[in-house]
Length: 339
Ligand code: GYE
Image 1 (cartoon, rainbow, N blue to C red):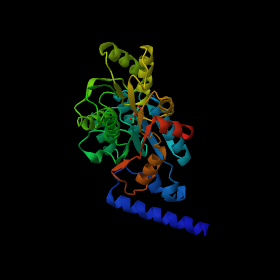
Image 2 (tube, helix red, strand yellow; image 1 turned 60 degrees about the horizontal axis):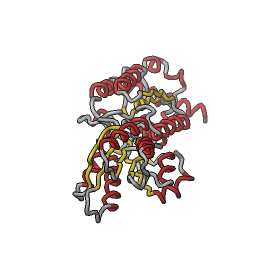
Image 3 (cartoon, rainbow, N blue to C red; image 1 turned 120 degrees about the horizontal axis):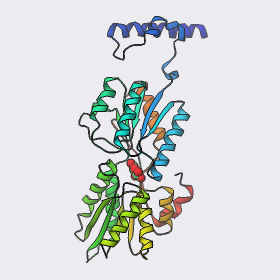
Image 4 (cartoon, rainbow, N blue to C red; image 1 turned 90 degrees about the horizontal axis):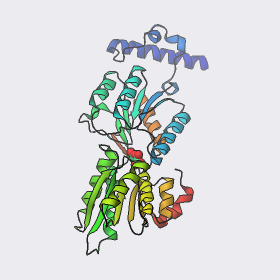
């Protein structure tokens, strides 16, 4: 039985090699295998060892650490060889990493693009090398969608809308202006652009809701603190802080407390992510509302990679499911939080 199965596989492989030869092998061909198909015993597709090149944004936030761990753990579990590269929040480092993955002829490239623009050239290089690209977490603004297989991640505009809806509800009876300051994520990144636009779209329904200052805090605690300090200095009357992630909100909380104010009371705080530290602050009433953004993309990414390698069809957009938390809900959810 075993020998027969093996021989069948060898025959199938020989046939497919012959067909590849006839059609012209766009991948550059594997001449060793063509010459001696019997030597490797005719492996099946699912037994193929997959090498995944992954370029991560950096380690700027609790969300990012949870995302990195999820990807590393899931790749291990799936038995893939993971080539992981940390770009330290610099696009040039990501481009370098992608080029090195192309050179190493990985099976699939995946990355979370630090900013939206400027990827066409390197994506074309990957396409020319026949290496499929999967976007995770953040999108690119390339017009040519054939440059990547799919984009797996959150709907950031929707997250911004959820933040705006909660705020609109809180101040629906306001008769005076509500002064909002905004801490944006990394300039030019998809989550910063989209969380800003989704929020603006909703709050414009109430003319009392006014964004009086909006600046980047680069998704980090340190910058969140620094920019909030500047906001507090320049504006006497801040009612609300909208931070594009928990880490910036946590930094801002330090600045608010240092200024002798009570976060969550004197200044209402909304943030995005719902990582453990953010949920902790919410459960203490320091953050009033958190929109969840799920970092555990690893298992879904590995499935997409497997499907791509197997030549199965993949959805062009895979959106992750997320919810929201008030302080009360955060208190309840905190003990079972994974990240
Ligand atoms: O919200 C933030 C991180 O791209 C969704 O990046 C991600 C964002 C996340 O630094 O904390």
